[in-house]
Amino acid sequence: MSSVGGSQVTASQKRGRLAEERRTHIQFQILALLTLIMLVTAFGRLNLAIAGRYLEDEFHFSTQVMGWILGGFAFGYALFQIPWGWAGDRYGPRATLTAALLWWSTFTILMTCVPLISPSRWWNYAWAFAAMRFLTGMGEAASYPNANKVVAAWTTGAQRGIGSSLLLGGVGAGGVIAPILFAATMQRWGWRSAFILAGLLALFVAAIWFLSATSKPSQHPRVNAAELAALNSASAATGSHAFRISGTPWRALFSNRSVWALVLSYLCHGYTPYIYFTWFFIYLTRVRGFTLIKGGLWGATPFLATTLMAPLGGWISDKAVASLGRRRGRQITVWIGMTLSALLLLAGSHAANNVSAVLLLALSAGLAQFAAPSWWAGCIDITPTYSGSLSGLMNTCANLAGGTAPILTGYLATRYGWATALDFAAGVSFAAGVIWIFVNVEDSLEVAV
Image (cartoon, rainbow, N blue to C red; front, side):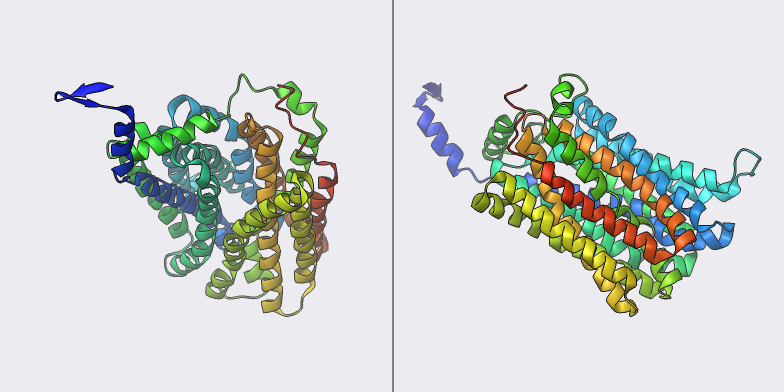
């Protein structure tokens, strides 16, 4: 009991007053800002894919050279996820995401300055564009590990799925808007407008994030006691974010067969999405003959399918686990998604009718993301305590494959044709599902560590 103003206040009375206090729900503002950040990161990924046609014409880049330029982003993105995750642990996601947004927006705008350089024997426009894209990807690598940290701090235990789906929704929404927006601006002001607009929007969002967000609910001046009580109890239940350079049981992770299979399968899964992020708009306009505006409209369809199918896949995966057990539930969801995705990719690559081809390819992209939540859930199933480290390892490998995808696609398309390039991607997608035969998410590492 405690005395306040001469009266005795019991613990139960305190709880009663806390229950009567209406929550401020600042968490929804934070999650909305997080969704906006993920949306502009999609702009940063897609602007070159949409502007690529103009760069090919202006600088006379071959398809293979363009593949290297497009792949530069993915390599930077893959290699710096774990360092940015560590920075988020050390300095907090508010500061880290702000710094990352400032970083990649600057290099996005500097893409427009590449034509000002003087080419030499050792340095040319292709290398300069690829370097800028590598540095842009390096900055954007902060998005997922730090977004996960924000979701962990700003949601209750019952809201984790909703919070995670907002990340996918933000990227999907950005993918829907970007082709339409950039195609329109480039037709009026040229390819540079796509990079200037994406960079300025990121700077604007960085300012809003820095001024409005905090890394933890307890740091926010407008969070009241009722909301803080709910969010703090959730944070205490989940523990600290697991992205750690030291303390992670890497030996146990690397000695586990299911971990190897999970990482290898997601490496295969990561190949095809980068074709949509890099080559799809160019494919529509160059190969399928769409105009710039129509290419922008139809180029949004894979991301619309992703936005709709990813949450559905996560929901079905959980339902399958409840009915069939954790191992079979995750496996069957992946097998359905990746098998259908591969078959539709094959059908779309050979379809004669352009509209049918695009719809088949878009649905293929959506079904691949239908399967994706089972990989992320699998990381938590295998090791809840170190799921952040396992997720980082898994996503790093997937994005290394993603960096290879634009290069290899350009090579195969040049040498054997676009149908062959997409057929190869279908085979890789199918392999991602097949490898799940060796994944047992019930093979927990928690006892070992």
